[in-house]
Length: 298
Ligand SMILES: [Fe+2]
Image 1 (cartoon, rainbow, N blue to C red):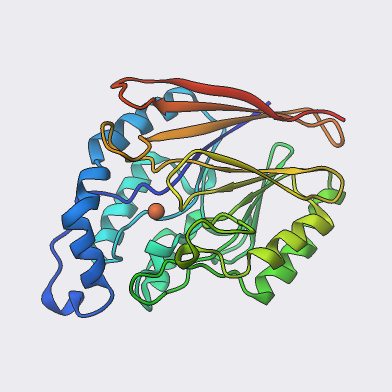
Image 2 (cartoon, protein in one colour):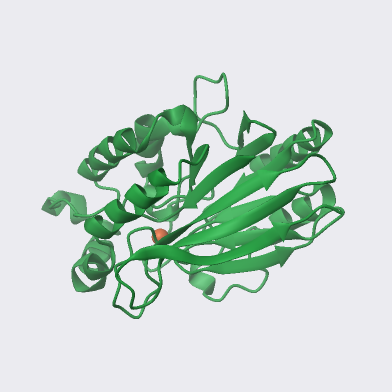
């Protein structure tokens, strides 16, 4: 059995004090939003408790689907790098970036230089997308949808080169009889709930999955529990989202949680159980919230 823990959108707090020159960009809107609202949602203490519970489950690997930082200040990348070092070694943690990690132009370069070891393929010296990591019958395929966007927008985009490489990789990994888990920040919704936050090429991404298949898609971005079913080559593909890993209990938002995916079996006879752990609304202790089988042998 292989156990993958999935968490997303930690939006690490506290937010360092920005200089006036650093705010002379889209950052000023994000900073005001943080002061007005987000600093009450994203709590370091909540995140610490989630991580303690997650590590106690002893997963084989951790997937983190983006938005480690908030407005991409240089000091945020320093803090996130230290936090990651405490979480675990790069070979045990796979990261894909979110829109907040590319909040302003050049931020994504900062992310890749800071966390590149968590975002590169096995035996590769440099981060790249897609990247593939093979772990005990499982292939983790990491994608980047992180692009800078105008103020009040949080769109993402894969682009043609990444999509065509993804199709090649998913085909090859299927031929290797690996359980293919695609990591992506933005959910591939066909009818996005908020258009200004959508994945711009969700349609072409879904077309790739429909043609060559995958066993599981994990995403963040929306900060809510969700399971949507996508067309695959021979069976439907579950696409699973999670709340922010730092969302405090007691607001109108969904409080912090994470998912464990337990993969057993082999080609054409995979089984994948999802266990959700976190804070139930209004509950101050972390507990199992949900358990269900997402993939069963055919
Ligand atoms: Fe986020």
